[in-house]
Amino acid sequence: MIGWSIMTNLVIVMLPYFYLPPKGSGLMPLVPQFLVFGVLNIMSIIAASGRLIDAFFDPFIASQSDKSQNAKGRRIPFMKWAIFPAIVFCCLTFLPLHRSESLPNAWWLMAALALFFMSATSYIIPYNALLPELTDTAAEKVKLSSFQQVGFVIGIILSALVNNYADLVQKYLHVVNRDSAIQYTIWGLSIFAGIIMLVPVLSIDEKRYVVSKQPSHLPILQAIRKTFMQRNFIYYLISDFSYYMALSIISSGLLFFVTVLLHLPTSIGGLLMLVMVLGSLLFYPLINYLSKTIGKKPLVLFSFGLLSIIFVAIYFLGKFPISPKAQIYTLVLLAAFPLASLGILPNAILAEIAEKDSNVTGENREGMFFAVKFLFVKLGQTLGIAMFAFLTIYGKDPGHDLGLRLNGICGFVLCLFALLFFTRFREKRGKKIF
Image (tube, rainbow, N blue to C red):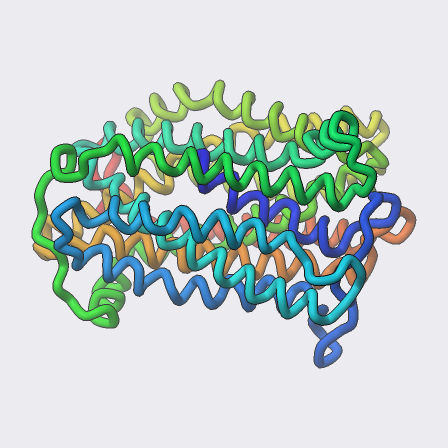
């Protein structure tokens, strides 16, 4: 989990900052900022195109994994062959053709992004399908999901520290150019991430630890249609989509919020992630306990509500009558609980939905459930990055920052939307979801 979290979060956190940096960052813009059809800037189109291609690749990988009869298992073989191309295309994403603002950079970035996401998907979808297959009870699913989330947030921390590592690269390796230092850092992290992703491939004997199940033989379109027949799954998807779109906005904008709205150095971005993650880890035991006593749904609803308030506060960053550091650290600490809750519970909820469907229908489509989830996650992340990139038209520099502040309002609306839809979700407390 640490490995693919590093790779995906490198793209989410660093892509807008690397290709459309704010003034004073030491970086130069690498793609044009002109509008297409007078509405969308080119960066938002790039982000959307690469991710949308990958999103529709998800069900194909899920179907192939679900139907696989490989002697070594349905999931691990896919994961093994996806690692190397994921490393290569993650590195190429941050290797523009020209070190200046140019249209060829935009075309290159679009292709590299699409191929990276397709490679990462070929690992992530089978990986997540192992969750319901390696566990037997709801408590085990929450526990394993908690461990997965620990890995995910460690990956977020490591990817958020890119600028800190780049400082060290410039200092100790005597690299003059800031963009080169960032590139070397990203390439090193990508290779490290790939090595970490080898761990489950080399250590999990799928045939030994996974209860043998009959592979799904449904055609891909029929499998997708049957997956969407779950009413609870629909409410889950809509809420998940809204949440990840909001989360992508704040992840893409973090370095901008810190440097432009609060006039703090970029190096503090990694420290903020560290504080937020350490704070969220403290809530993990509480979330595991509360999920057994009051159920998962109340925790998810509370988390959406708190996040919506935090997003409103982003609009006013730099205007509160306290120091800039106090403002951002307050928001980060407030975000610790909802990020912990929404990191642990959704995967456990989905694993239960997939397990119940398997018990009722006799068809084992765990991969398809997670593929459809990640289709919507990626659509949300795509639109989140595109929304952030689009709003930069209205200001992303000191003294001209309206576009950054408007992202806070967008995040508020999305979290409120997620909350309202998840109120329709039906949960039987302490037991499985119906």
